[in-house]
Image (cartoon, rainbow over the protein chains, first blue to last red):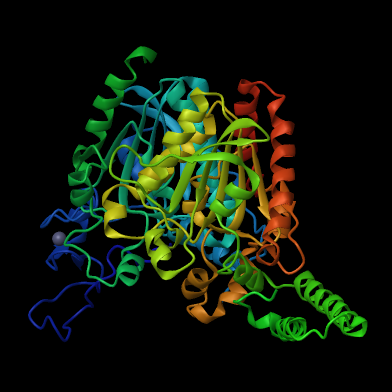
Length: 291
Length: 320
Ligand SMILES: [Zn+2]
């Protein structure tokens, strides 16, 4: 399943001058935005300074992969790896558009080859291998490139005897690569098995949304699983479930708070506490492997 | 005998089969010409059938894979193995009847069997949840696999599911965790695993018992990341484009062999497994025995290493 959601500030950046609804407010383009969660008008710069979390209601906006790495890894220490691994089109897939064209558009927009950034760096002075998903890149879906980069990340950590952090944000397997995408679930989970055998810590961070084949593989295999507040996390999409069972879904279904209550994750951590939490956890779990 | 259920593209041959059945019912005593006539028609029917089945589209193959009379896991269990004893439950929540498992013998040697199970009639279908497992099904499967490891028994899995069940309870009890955990555990299980897709290989719910040393597929089975209907609805925004989606997704055994995802195709009798369950059981048994013989010679460490390599190498990308 792929989840499409537009730009994080999709709920109308208010136009210069008056609008139909907000006759009383005058908002210059782009400086002020309306929060998609609480509908308050917030100053965009404040939100950016606040790690893309709403200053009024604490809503965690989706953020680009590189921004995630920047706010997690000690400044200037991140070495990206496998940037050259690029998607092919093994099925020559074409629906209403060609897969190749979708890829090209996503690459142009994101400046990335595919939906994940991987590499190593320091977190609180300790070396770690980290990955972050770029959701706007075809819904952060996992095809051959994502599977390969995650597997190499884990193998790199094994060799360097370091822990792994993966920030997931994905609609699941990439349909345009068919069965090959499905097999990336086996590939990445098998790599995690090796990490566990070696006693190296793996922390999985689930961010909005983490669904389908990504949840049903490495994302749910963390020694510690953390979710950001109110992230949608699940196997099947809520629409598919509602259609199958022909019932309305419970309040908060598949949100971080709900799955915490059902025992599926260890904790919910706000973005501003994320780096500190990861640093402390890795220091404890990785104590045998020194610095 | 004509099958009760038939598929639209078989119409021509099914009419012929009906006619043959009718003629057999009204045979005049000892009439040689009548018997001749029947045998001629039977040959003709078989020829047409084999022509139809030699050029099925991926969507038609999907219909055969879902055929209501197609042999299911328990049919094979009884036709291929001896002394089957079903083992129930995940020891945590309940027994999921969409997955069956147990110990049996294959040519005398003890083995573990795990497979998706669909139902034939309405009552059975509901009991088996249309072959869609809940987390407890995957956890039962893993429990049995780990038992097989302890007792040095090879594991045979049989895949035939539309997918993992999309339900509230399934999510609450960790459908994704159950699947993920199986993928991880199967990758290091210290005993041979042979998986065979016998009908529908529906996405992660199929792969959850499919991480194996050898992955085989019946000729008219399918294995896919998403159902053709689901894919059509999302990518074509039109669920009726399932035939096109089936073709584009490359879900049939021939394509999967080319992609390196499966190791062997087991040919089906003319007109599909459901027309001759005995014949397909014989072919399946031969394939299982030979696959096991093939991997049993390697020690368990290299077996696990090779299993990692097998899945590690699946995927197509460029690097520059
Ligand atoms: Zn807000």
